Image (cartoon, one colour):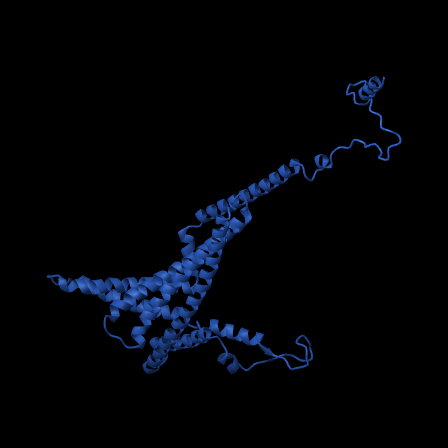
Length: 363
C-alpha cells in the first residue's frame, strides 16, 4: 500500500503532462515565484539594437563630414581654376611692393643679359655692329632708370614702421598708482616719443632708419640733395639693411624651429595612433585634424625656407657694398639680386592668389 501511495504521490506531484497542475504547499514559508521576463533581455540599454543604432549614427555623421569636406575641396578647386594668372598679376601690380618686385625682376634680368653679353662679346672675332652697341647703351640706360624707379616706388616707406611704433606708444601708457585706467578724471599720459623709439623692437627701428636713409639717397639722385649727403645716406642705409637682414635671419630660424617642433608633435601623434591600431574609420575626426594640421605646418615651413633663402641672397648682395668687396662684384650681385627678386615675387604671387581664391570661394 505504501508503495502504491508513494507511486501515486510521485506521479501526481511531478507529472509534466499538460493536464496536471503544480500545487505548492500552503504551509511553505517561501511564496510562489511569479514568472517575469528577463531584465537584460528586455532592456534597451544592453540590446544589440542600440549598438547598431549608435554605429549607424556615427557612420552617418562621418559620411556627412566626408561629404562636406569633399564639397569644400571641390569648391576650393573650382575657385582655384577660376582665378587666372592675369588676375593675380593685376592684383599684384596694384601694390607698390608688387611693382617694385616686378621692376626688380626686369632690372636684374637685363643685367644678366648684359653680363653674358660682356663675356661673350670678346670671344667673337668680328667687330660689333653699330646697332648692337646702341642696344647695349639703351639697355644700360634702362637698367639705371629701373633702379631709380624702384627707389621712387619705395619713397616714404618708413611710414609703416613709424605707425607701428606710434601704436605701441598708444598702447603702453602711464597710469598713476591708485587710479583706475578707465576713470575719466585721470587720463593716461603717453610716454615720450624718444622713449618709445628706444624701446621699439630692433627690426622695426632698423626698418624706420633704413627707410629714411633710402629716401635721402633717392632725393640726392633726383637732384634735390647734394651727392655727398646722398652717398653718406646710401652708406648708412646699407649698414641698416645688413643689420636688419641678420636680425630677420635669426627670427626666421626661431620661427622654423617652432614650426618643426609642432610638426614633430603631430607626426609623433599620428605614428602613435597608427601603432595603437587607430585608423581613419575608428577615429576619423582626430586623424583628419592631424592631417590638416600637418599639411598646414609643412606649407608654412616651405615658405619660411623660401624667406630664409631670400634673406641669404640679400645678405650676400649687401655684404659687397658694406665691406667694399670688389672681386666678382657685378656677377655675384646680379645673380643674388635676380634670385632674391624671383623668391620674393613668388611669395607675393602666392599671397595674392590665396586672397583671390578665398574671395571667389566666399562669394
